[in-house]
Amino acid sequence: MTWILSIFLLCLAGCKAEQAAPLPTIKVPKSALQNSRAEKDNAFKYGEHSPLPEAEKAMFKGLRYFPEDPGYRFRLKLHHHEQKPTIKIATSTGHQRDAEKYGYFDFAVDGISSRLQVYKLLDIQPRYPGYLFVPFIDATSKHESYPGGRYLDLKENDSGTYDLDFNLAYNPSCAYGKPGYNCPIPPTENTIPAAIRAGEKNYKETAH
Image (cartoon, rainbow, N blue to C red; front, side):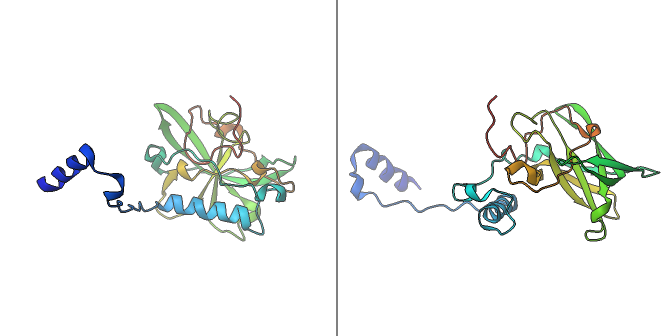
């Protein structure tokens, strides 16, 4: 490798730019999360069911995200509620949706203990059996992330252990300005005192 280093040093000393061979482009493979986000951007810009107002599609350049961070990915045991009561979850249109309190996760973010309730939205269980809904508000809400909170989706399993990955946190459809959506509002009990700087940011940058 010594001769390569010598040629490099000679070029630094006085090789003309046109004599230097172009360096090959190194392609860095995208992660599965990056690919998923690119597909979502494409669906938002061109999809028939995009939640973006039509006037904004032409200018849309992609959703805003916190950097992917494995520190916000937790493998947790889900603690089941013995009674699994049915509660009412308020929505953005002033309505309510029936939900079963299925269980909860206990974990810590930045040393701050937190608990998140996991729900089953009863009106969609016939179409999506086993779908578990985890809405939450955290310390970034109203600042860096959507004021109305964000969502995580899980699929019920037999092991009782789940990957709670806040890198997958996403905004409700109401976050983008197109009317006609009826979005569940995270219950107060699902407020995380820590800042979850992972997942989707607010659609439009908010002044601090």
